[in-house]
Image (cartoon, rainbow, N blue to C red; front, side):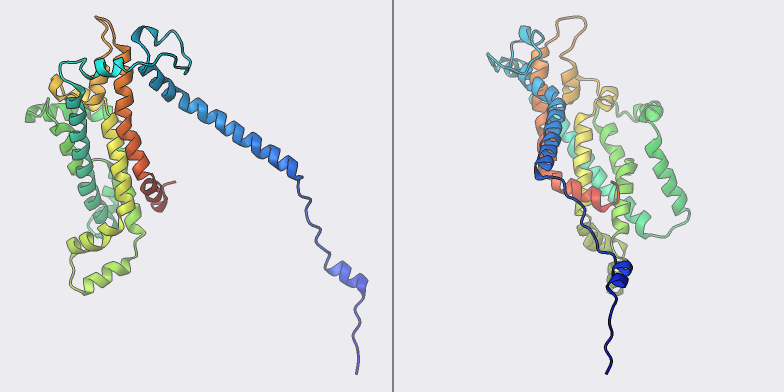
Length: 302
């Protein structure tokens, strides 16, 4: 019977003991955390300051708006909201309805056309698919001002000027390539085994798209809805080009009408109506924030 002995020096040379790294003192970590959060708070206040000043300015008399740029409100008044709502030929109720109609039409158009186009690029096999997908992506880099004149000529020949059609109909033709690309990336993440199982049961492309792919695309559809609503509601250039009569104005055009170079400008009414026009955007982002973050994260666009 033999016993094995181990040399302690040999063990110490072959497996050196790990020395734990010194941890910074608790007080130093707490000070660093406080400074970091204080810096973030200051930056947040700087970003939110213009919005706060807008709300405060809407509650001041028109002749006191630019006298003080602080956010301290001493004598608030709601006169600007009452006067600004009926400042134009039509009340802002009509302008809000016009913007809502345009936004709903644009949302429906993008949801229907972009989802169908994305399914075709992601699942179907057709000639020159890669080429057409590259052409679609190239349109994202094309400025809208380059094609505005040809589009205006086409819509003028169709008799669509001073109507909502030039702003809504193109949405049903999948002209927003960004949303098509977003949905393509999302559909590619869905397992093809689901399509194969449905095809074995006799389902065609329309049934696979409507009953399998579309219900799984809720995050991408919600992202498309939020972005389309924000961009359409805030759009100024498109309505300025195609909407000529005041009865068809959107909120953005009505806000611009408060500034008149030939007469006195109504800054108080403009600020008050600007605050009200931001409420739908704030609610849309607040209610859809969870779907927005999930939709962007699951499509690989970070």
